[in-house]
Image 1: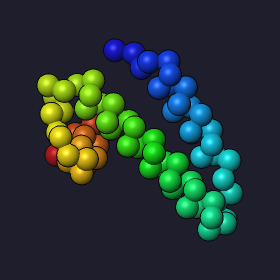
Image 2: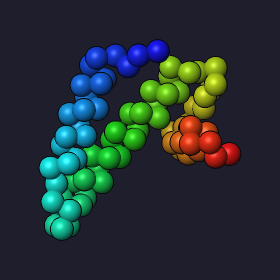
Image 3: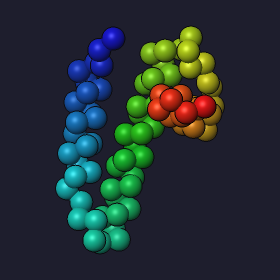
Image 4: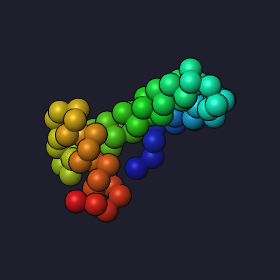
Length: 75
């Protein structure tokens, strides 16, 4: 199952954006965190949508915590 081109482009653009921040400045630390947060939300939501039978979680908190744990082998 491949990732659609538009989503892959989005992820790559936001990853590049996140690498541009100088993490010795507080404003850049916040912007870098927000960039990573956006990507994290997109990716766990994509996992749930594309594997609904395995990840039938509905709430954002449940998706964010349970998908991450199960994809890394933790329970």
